[in-house]
Image 1: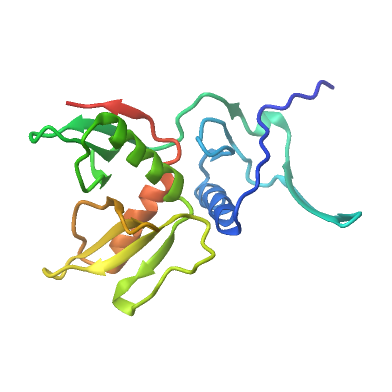
Image 2 (image 1 turned 30 degrees about the vertical axis):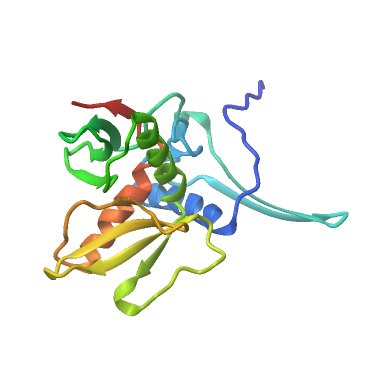
Length: 215
């Protein structure tokens, strides 16, 4: 039997980042959706209802390895490469003031996140977008109404902040460790729970969202 490695990657990652990656896989498994196995969400696989699960913990010469493996007949779950698993897309555009901005548009046409500020150049807007793509998936959610603070050992250089505005609407913003707000929801929500659902959609969709120029 011929063995083919479809995708493989190895790199250090913080615990929070690992947890976020597993959470995305768990969410898709629970919903019966195709599972993305890479950060860009360009390689996906259909996991059948009852695959074989193998967990192996090894210790050898001072090194420890934990392997979690799912196995099934190839006919039960198709593999796809060069796909777009995200349900959203980034749109880059120039506003009426001549500044560049980005917005994250869901396939249902709703804008689920935006840059919150204008940039002097398209390149800087792209850099801001990439910062969100890099930091949002593993960012902690901090409820400012409960005076919460992000832990210092987070797996991201940013944190989602939940807060209630002066009009009584709930909102979220993604604040970088340097103090800058790099994204926000762009709208108010009627409840804290709906706000959490909105930012969860951003978390799930930013990694593999394509970038397009928009008018």
